[in-house]
Length: 147
Length: 147
Length: 81
Length: 81
Image (cartoon, rainbow over all chains, first blue to last red; front, top):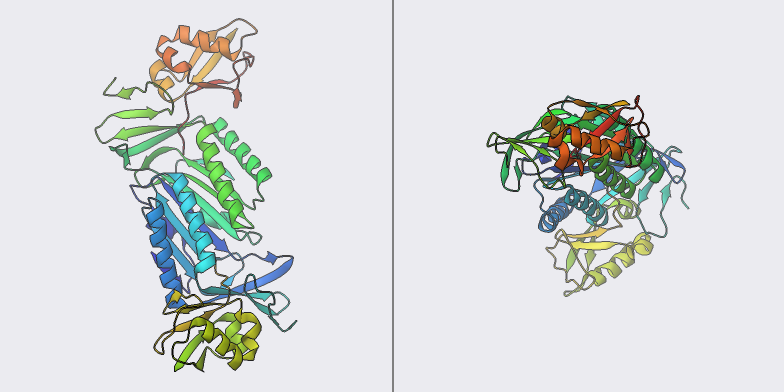
């Protein structure tokens, strides 16, 4: 199950969705907004996406994970819009018969989501400036403090 | 935070407890009662413990994990008594600044809990017989079908 | 032929537009599109080398051909999660 | 000296008791306890080789000495989680 949503991520619902009588293990990963990045303070993040492609890339990742691990249930959710400090922007949850597979699959899914799913994060710094996060780009422009 | 409890495990509460503004990653593991083990059907499990030692062993594991990984918050819960099919008997949750550490710490904690914490599981098979689970023991007695 | 390129995140901000229309020769590839986009929107020039492209919601390679009816997207390095 | 051993899970069921009292010589170790327990409760004999022991909530080794006031526990292979 794959979802892009503007709403807060509800973990009880996710763990209920993935728990299965065939599976003895559930692993849930949440990516949450951190207050400090390299010593700079974040007030909030906003996420934007290329929604149809993000949806289809997440569906492909679920399919690939299911072909690699004996997954019972799988939930991939990315929140869009504003995600304040301490709240979750992404959730990955899988159930498998045994725990090693659940850890491996959830970790792999999260790595691939960060590599492949067209979603972008904008930092809203406590200084008032904002900045798109584009990993590996040599020159990132920052609103208000153009470098 | 370490807890032995007779009550159902509430995952929303756990993820709220471990989420921290200093941490960008939360990993939650749930061990749930499986319906089938080697083709045999389980109706329910009951867990018993040597409670004071189980509590202190889990506290030591939390301390050791905190010395190995930059853990923000950590919750270890083992449920005792009856845990029906599909419900969680154990929860491990950690938050860390970055995700790799959260996956590693949660997986390590779960491995150590299964090795070291004095808790025992009794299978209640659909056939009506019951059986203590003692991994590695050559001869396990089964009530009702003594071998 | 006329093609339209969707822009996202910093690319959208720098271009000041969610979409850019380009006129490219038939047989154009993603590489052609990248060059034409850099020429038409010079603000994007320095970041385009870091951008991936998608055709109809699938990642494309530099040699992938484009057609007028394709949905083409310029994707700056992603940062979800 | 008199010591008491807590039993759990299958060991408790086989002995039909949550606790067993043993009389061992001063200077006894966990190894002595294991032997005395097997002699006093023959039902436990075959499983004791698989059991760990704890003294005052800490895992003990076969050479750990025991004292009358110690809380000693016989721990069959654990199966939590």
